[in-house]
Length: 315
Image (cartoon, rainbow, N blue to C red; front, top):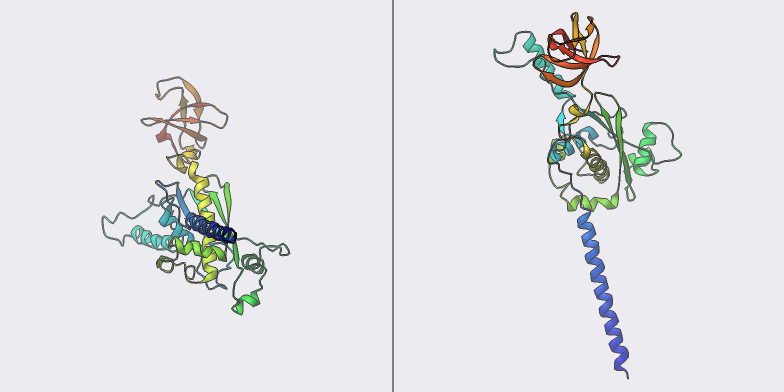
């Protein structure tokens, strides 16, 4: 009679152990699935310029500019082609100045018309969580970033046991100047292990890329994962762009007639005239071309063909 309770206890213990093992396995699987990794793309979604945010919130945290961090994501992901609009552009402009002054060697092939246009401009920033804060001041940004902590506490080296980061990536279309998206990203201290599991902070590329402090400080890692969260969402949202790129998805740049000519019904000057074209008239190419003849529309909706030697791109 006493054997039955003992067997029951043993069976219950075995079930508990099995349940604990199953729970541990499930938790491990969830952890592996949530491992933080930079997204990868098979093809570029467009050309991107990254700009530094107007307010400097990172210096007080002893971090590098978030611009450098986002550039690192972009370079490793292959999702966008990156153009330099900062120090690299300034150095390139100096080389072009040397070329225009005749100081470079013959055949250097440095001059105008070689700079690649950016399709999008991306600005990384932090956003405040503190409902009592107002405006875009530095204190409000840090208050939201660190979760109701003061700058004095920050300066005192407070341990960020419950630190969180809420960030935003704002993307603007260069051609239309439309703000295409403002993507938010969130992370907290407990997410850091997922970044370590994915090897995100294991390499030495952060400091080399100018993203100082993001891989070797706790708050830097929290901010990194928040930006990675936002960048992953951005890549996912932009995945529906046409394969030929953003330049093809945007309206064709307008042109201005430089000489008096005519708009024709077909790609031949021997065809019927739709209307005369005066110097300075703005026309809008449809994208159809035959030799030197371009199909265009005027501001009144008239459509026809004009010789491309009679106009220039509008500035």
